[in-house]
Structure formats: structure tokens, C-alpha cells
Length: 70
Image (cartoon, rainbow, N blue to C red; front, top):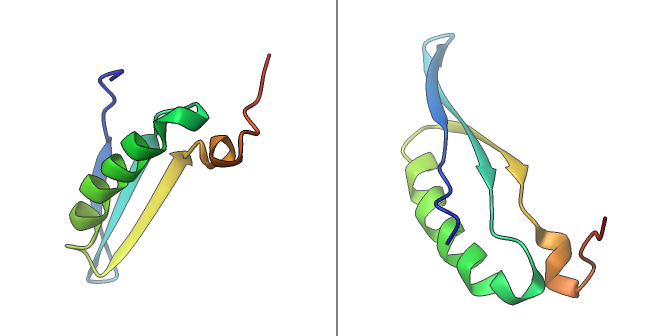
């Protein structure tokens, strides 16, 4: 909904490909279906590499209604 992107790069480390990606998943406890859908797109992209790192703001705290409020 917020037109999020998945910055990703592939590195050749010691002869092996390592994929690195950054993510900011949808927030609020009501967006759990959107987060699930986003991860369903991301994991197959990372699975094409023998090694992968996924870093970012997963907003998993919103699953239990523990959203951070500023």
C-alpha cells in the first residue's frame, strides 16, 4: 500500500554468491496479511542464492498489538 521496495544486492564472497536485502514491511496489527504476502514475495527471491541476509523493519511487534507509539 505504501509502494515499498526491496533493495537487494548480490555479492561474490569467496566464490559463493551471497544475497543481501533490506525491507520495511507494512505496519499496524491489521496489516498482518500484507506482511505475509510481502514475505511470500521476498523469500523466493532470496532462495535463489546459497547464502542470504534479510534485514530491516519487519513490524512483527504489531502482530501482538504491541505497536510503538510516538
